[in-house]
Length: 622
Image (cartoon, rainbow, N blue to C red):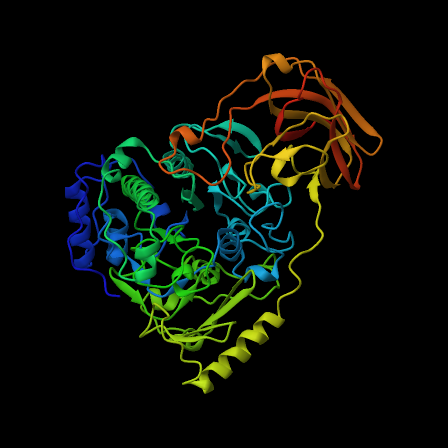
């Protein structure tokens, strides 16, 4: 689809930090191929400007290909992302995975997620095998300062934690779903902290602060930032000024009948409001790079993690989040790098999230080192096509594969073949309405064989892996309720495990259990995050592992109403959250090996013990 010719304008009611005159001037200069003059603001040194490029990868959560005005959506305006496309490049047919954690795994490793133990979106199934090399480790080995801000969703405990995977600084949450976006409970390098304001704004602030920190540091070491924005994933929360634009807006339906027929207008309004907030934050980020004189030598990538989380405008394509159809897998991919990518560059070869690792390594000019992984990448580099050099011949004839649950698919430059035997000409039929398998048995047979051969290369995904604790490099270890099981009458607060807590804890015979493996020996102070009413105080709980145990009495009330759902613009399916208090359970001695960590009540003062959200282990001795 060509870039629409309508002008980019700043939204007058949005309070966007990018003034209209700046946006228009930027677009005009970009279209003319004219380099923008540096701002007079304090910025990078000339030496730094000529050094290796900085890299910022922005990944949104549950937006779709159609959630940009760039792609013809009449229901919202995304001027900053539209400008980014005009100033840089688009990989026009770019594909991710059906859901979020597989896409994140493929971004981080350049390899298909099925090769590295990722089979689920929660309870440990999202963890990337510890022997995989990440893109952050690759850039860090080359001297880059690295940071990740936002939704990690690739493992919580070391060695799966972002600080263990090459990121010097991490601020955000490691689970796949977070129940509150306003002043939420988050973590900073393992330690629990409280966020400030609306989460997407807060994450962008942290990215800009990291940019400032690196720009003000003597020397010319570049930075790599992974900004994993958590919206428009539910809960459907957004600041009031964005909601005011959409709460009464009439939504133009997608041209495809299924999307129009099944659309939930209220959900769509909230999602689009959240997308406009993302666009404003992209404007803030790009403006900040210009003000620091870093924009010319910074690669900025923008894409989504799966199809849209609702039946809404998606260019007439079939499918949404969770689907392996075109609409469930296609994502925008915008890449801005003024020093090497000409404005308006279009890459027509199909690309995938596995390609970003090798592409960014090539664009940054990183040479192979002894620390590089020997595992072959599934992705290919698009650096040549992006910078106007002859493209690799592999790009034109490649096959892109994807699988989720019991569905799999292969995409060529023209066709999409599904594991159910259906075949579609995506070039002519992006809505996948006309099955060509019987009319083109030659193509169907060939692609079916290729898909089956690829599936045979994937190992058994569901490995028996405990949750690691006592890693020698980790001061803090989180053990949330989502990673535990329970016995007796204890129940989980919601069927979707991420961000849940345990309740109905009213029997001394009931237990909360974590299947853990201690990776070293030492003493750990344990804190429990809980809620308990004043009239329930006095219960005693015991935490034990092997022969080591500690007990504590609940003596302080922590009363909290739900803090998430009052901010929802659409009723949520996931569970709600509270403000949790903390209490010390004492010290626990851990010895290397696999065991069950058990939490139980030894006495119950009234009718219930407490609601339990999280254990935090902090190393206090070697």
